[in-house]
Length: 129
Image (cartoon, rainbow, N blue to C red; front, side):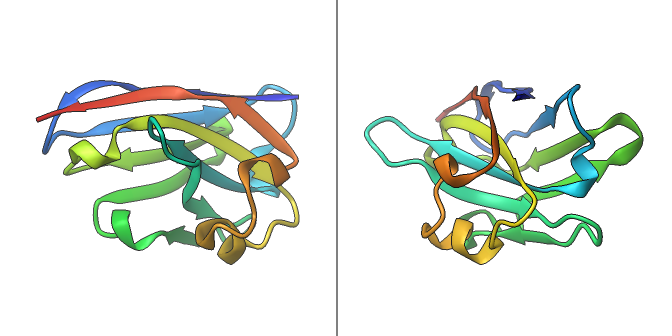
């Protein structure tokens, strides 16, 4: 089972991008969905998650106030709206799904991308200064 992340691209610092995550194989609403990113030479990190059911959003401090995670259940999509992008946001972004993940563990680095039940290939976000 694969998730598909899309929407990456090249943007100037201060610009915006919206990433999308979907799959044709199951309903995302029943899963917590998390976005991870990996910059060159750095470890992959969780940046935002949305819980199943209540769809509560969670963010790491570095993206709070700039990134917004949301669901469109009718389209089986999860979005990551990224505004006020910085050069340090440049990375490959991945989405992943898990029914039982501890979101706090993802955002603190305890739970890794590889621990998630379902994972997708990434989409490149390039931010130019």
